[in-house]
Picture 1 (cartoon, rainbow, N blue to C red):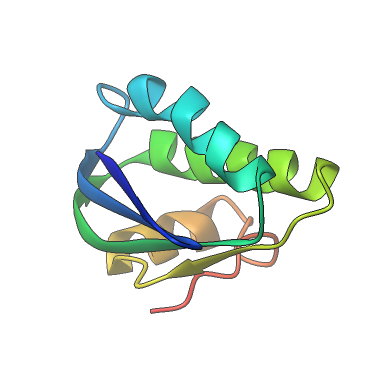
Picture 2 (cartoon, rainbow, N blue to C red):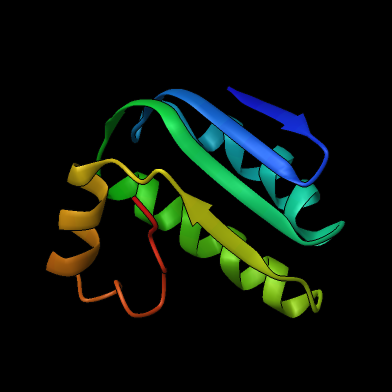
Length: 94
């Protein structure tokens, strides 16, 4: 689930292969509309689909000339980003 509060987009629940498709388009609209902070403090589970989702939002925001930052990344997401060597692309603040 995505909840927008100004420039902050708060995600909650699992970010997995079963859930990210429903979030992709809605989030893409949000990140291209202005500079955004994606808050992951409410995320309960992640898999590699979460990385794919965040990378797609980052590409979309950059293409629109916007900034995207990610706060409160779960430890599992930070580990996956390192494993897939995308931690330098996604700045994951914990």
